[in-house]
Image (tube, rainbow, N blue to C red; front, side, top):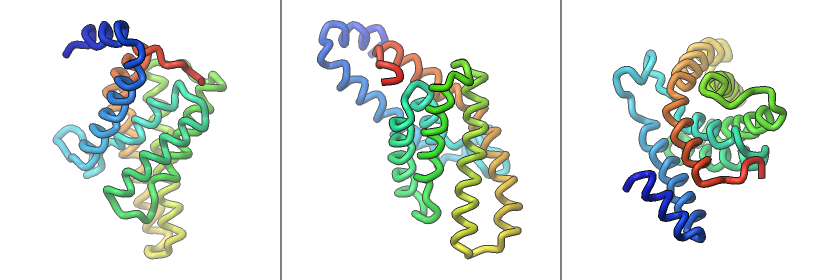
Amino acid sequence: MSLRAIENFVDTYPSARPLVNGAVTVASVFLCLLILPLRLPGMELAGISPNWLLIWVVAWSVKRVVWQGAMAGLILGLLQDGMTAPEPTHAIGLMIVGALTAKLQKQRYVQEDFISVALIVFLMAVISETITALQFSFLGERSLSDIWTYHQFIALSSAILSSLWAPVVYFPLNRWWEMMGIDEQS
């Protein structure tokens, strides 16, 4: 089914618009969850791959209010915790990422384009990985020097890869939400 056919369908049946939009949004989250553990050639740097859920949270939050970004981060963080170990939790980092991204856009510090979204993803990946490192520090299972040495490597690798791959998630979702006429900043 083509994008034009979907657009015609939702124009013909406007009551189906929220259902179709919800289905596409949930499908995009599911796709990000599926590719999260993949380590494909060219998509990893020293064993670190892009943080697809963080990219999705940024794409969602850039046109939403703070509480919507935080809720998206919380939900996706809990989903990621379900796929990995629950400690340290990913929910805290993604919730903060969602809230900060929405706050940045609301304050109009950044313009919405590929470069600014990539920069936001870079910054938010560093913040998210720092929150994870702080949680490892509080758990006390490893030495602080090991945690913070390894944190620099992980944070930089994740930030670089996630920001480079951000347009792959951001562009189609942003285009879809614009086509659906999602009320921005509601």
